[in-house]
Image (cartoon, rainbow, N blue to C red; front, side, top):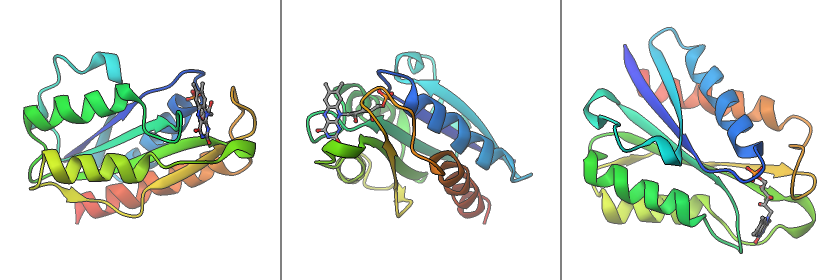
Length: 154
Ligand SMILES: Cc1cc2nc3c(=O)[nH]c(=O)nc-3n(C[C@H](O)[C@H](O)[C@H](O)COP(=O)(O)O)c2cc1C
């Protein structure tokens, strides 16, 4: 059995909802099981028990949130080398500027050069700054999770 960790940052709950749907997609693969954690829940995480990690956050001021960047650093210290690592982001429909996925991927390359980046990352729209997620975004999240699990299990 492979294990995947889904780490999210959120202000209004949309990115958490997406993270949970991604995890549901991962769990559809009988060879992979997922755990979902908020960025504030990482202190006791034992990275040796995970084979892959997905990091997700809302785009804030064109960039990944400080919280998710701190999480990449924290888990890279605990050990991301050799693991499959990917990213997802949410953005506001009428404000779409910037990129969090790319920034997270760059950070992983920098802090954990031995990690394997899972691409492409997932970009999901929210209709207003507080949500809801756009039509079909949860479905896309589930598919993203399924694809991540497939690569992890192969
Ligand atoms: C402080 C702040 C800055 C934001 N900056 C951007 C931005 O630069 N580009 C963008 O597309 N959306 C921006 N947004 C909208 C967020 O991406 C949107 O609120 C988020 O995707 C909702 O996810 P959440 O419910 O998980 O917080 C910003 C929102 C906040 C609160």
